[in-house]
Length: 411
Image 1 (cartoon, rainbow, N blue to C red):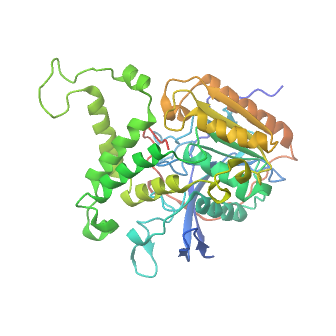
Image 2 (cartoon, helix red, strand yellow):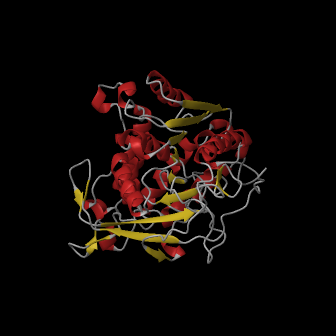
């Protein structure tokens, strides 16, 4: 029996940048004439090219999913506890791909990228992007890698929405969809949280209508507030009470409006760090993509009809304390799939950590994912052994990748 080592890293990794010159038309009608995608891979592709797994990232994460950069060994991938030799998504068995989505600020073409038509950053002229647009671009990357069909497409939160979109937009191109801590569409409350965060950014005097690059400034005040709002929603009340309670920074109440409680200090620290490395226009784009995703929109709200094109098997997982994308929303996905007589496994994990639970070490959660991928691996079989496939695109320095050593990559 093959024994897999536990908690081994994939080791030092290199990101690659791949340029595309075939125009990409967005759902909005806008077009990018040319663009670049940054991606990383882990493990080895088998001879049949049947063991590839695409991992889709959430709001402020990136292509840097696992491993570390040789010149920055502390910068572990944002899902490093999930992906690697002997881990739930085992890179001894699977060839894993992490891709940075369009509109991001971690290497793929986004608002801060230079528009070749003007010689200036795209800024406010970058197209409003949707989950479907990201999936279309990811499919082109798969084509470039010579992968016609994925063993699985996997993601948590906004990444889970992308996995769900893959299942309906390209049903013949994936065998499994792993949808974790996701939702088929945002509630009004979730849209409201996103809008308050966006208002904080666009009303910052340094925003300049989204073209702040030309002014040499960043709307950091607005971005800090947006991050605070988002971060609160990613954690459960119980998790925040356990972590901070009502602990004070000093020995006594200060009777002022500066930082008094430990939780305030934590939010201030996280938001300041976030505002240093994240782009405000990217935050606007990605939260809007969250708002717009609704596969049932063109089916009069009928999710069963919307998911009917999907033919793959599904693993859907949720967390009891996740009040932002609650288990009830995952159950909606499961019901629609069952109504379509699809093969679906569902796990509702009793975890206290809120929405961020999908990023954390929970042995029950990881056991579910590991068991599911073990079945996928058995279905693939040995397949004639791995091949050393040439990866397209140019290698890029770690500095062009994400600062993934940051907590709270949710949504």
